[in-house]
Length: 70
Image 1 (tube, one colour):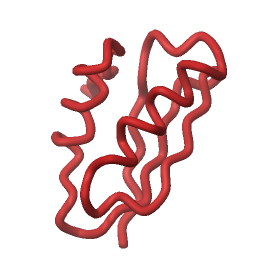
Image 2 (tube, rainbow, N blue to C red; image 1 turned 90 degrees about the horizontal axis):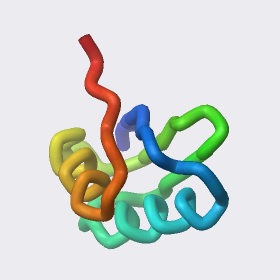
Image 3 (cartoon, rainbow, N blue to C red; image 1 turned 135 degrees about the vertical axis):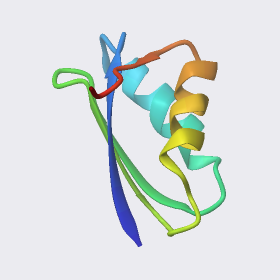
């Protein structure tokens, strides 16, 4: 298992957190998702096969913006 942290823009409430959690939970290999709209952080516990890029694409697909790291 690995932990992946993603910064997300646009989460403004608990409902947003739930949308992100539910969407990422559908990805095969994802075990646990924590989202916090106040910090803008999403933390995913997933198997080694799950890539950060797949998670970021799913977040984009549901209408949130991934904050890219420099």
